[in-house]
Image (tube, rainbow, N blue to C red; front, top):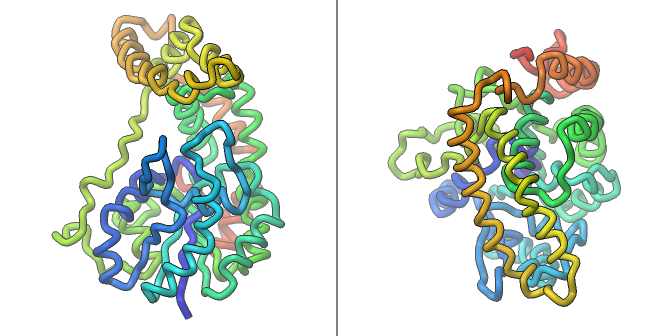
Length: 339
């Protein structure tokens, strides 16, 4: 039976790096008997067909999430991806399939057991292994918030509300329960996103080992590892605060929201990419300013140690259950590092 490795995230666990690796090496992986399907990775951006590095299309097809205002989010392409996936698997006849989208855990909708059961139904004819990397909750919230600010999310929340919202959403045991119910605990592979817990401190090697490709050496010339390194740069707390301050002062987010809702100026919203190019300028300006602003005015600390400890305390019981049930650790330690 064909084995499907369904990597469901979570976000902020090296997803960009790993997706780049899989996409960049898809031909070499196929030679080893592992297919990284194009189905669910095809999208259209202003009538230009592109192949992305991730299978968000499959997730969106299950959720039926389409933005009618965005012509590049082509519904027909997404809807066809489920059918095309099975055709691609049957045509190529690879022994192993890798499907990867952090949308399965990054979107609140996928906390619905019915949708996870639907995902199981979609993959019923395959031997499916669900892989998830989980990050220490306080680190996850900090990293996700930085991404939120850096990418100028239109639904911006202040840090306090962001912490409150995501602390409730990152109960890993609760998140995993419907996946366990649908796929069986023996088919759910949980990996802590900590270097000291990964094979040779490498995300790539750790992932490859868990899909039984551990015989591949990162130094093997046939595989491209170097270009798979993440381009998602992490910034200090001070820089993130300055980015937020610059953005609030410039009112860029408010302008984009107005364009998004306006029928008269819809064509500007469709092409508001020129406004988003200001993101790089904001970041460069924030980095430059951070060199001259002393810590007593704007500190480097984004989430205080007290808040970090509080977040981890709230998640302690859940983490212990995950460690015991999914990793077989009697001591209940899911993460080795502390806030």
